[in-house]
Image (tube, rainbow, N blue to C red):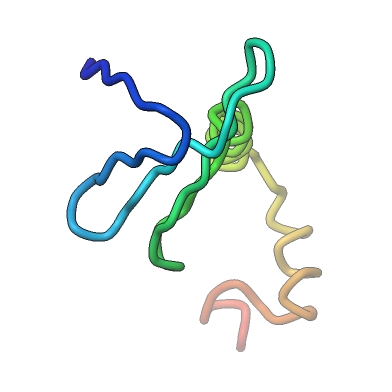
Length: 83
């Protein structure tokens, strides 16, 4: 882990297009500003962790075939059923 010290108004550059600016401190809280392209996701770690857990649950979800057919608007799931 790289550890840096910065004062209010100072920045850190990550790569060529991400800038983190120290906006200020209040007690033990540090306020940061992040300038990044819209294509870069920026999340608090607890939100990122929740997204990852939700994705893991979705991958492991088991949906009955009948429910999938309902979601597809009653379409048949394979060609054999088209006859």
